[in-house]
Length: 270
Image 1: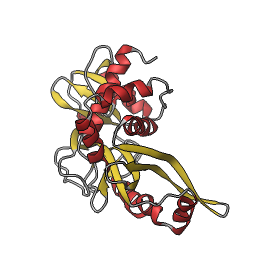
Image 2: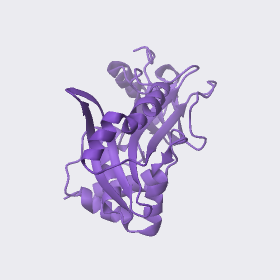
Image 3: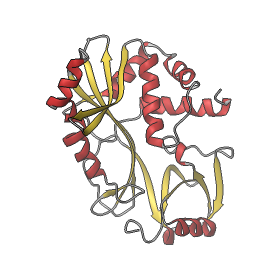
């Protein structure tokens, strides 16, 4: 059974998942998030049912897989959507061409949708949006989504596989969530959704002296400052930790309402 505190945090994460704006514009594909929002408006108890459904499962350690599990829970317990399949591999001869994140049927329209999901966090520099792991960039992820992942269900090999199961995809839909983190003085880097959630970032050598609250990665989607869910740390200790780990760390500050990343001086080249 999920502990009460964890269940409360999970409930809030699912509310955020439904209400948050897309990180990446969905056009020309459909917005899968709009279907989830429709189901929540139809059934205000949807999120509580999803938390109960997740109670029987072991939560994945990787945040991206947890995000997929949250979406699967919301679809499964909804009235108007049916989760037909998840992580469906597409094979041709002995080669794997990739997989479809989800096949979701809209019971209202009868249409079968191929959904692709992404939960991402990117930090903006003068020329790129980098992930905390700087090998990951927003431009690269965007190209992969629109040029490879979403068109995958249009491949003849995929259509043949689905036809063997009596299925035909009617269209593709995108569900992206996350946040873009800005440093003052750096221009925006498209593509991005105009209403995306924002944060900030600073290198260790620019930190003011104050107390910081470290956010566990599992709480990145909806970071909340809490004595029970965060670790307090002062600036010298924070600098030492970030530089020794050579990776960005998400924090909250009492002086800023939005979450931020503290990055080592070698980032994004580290």
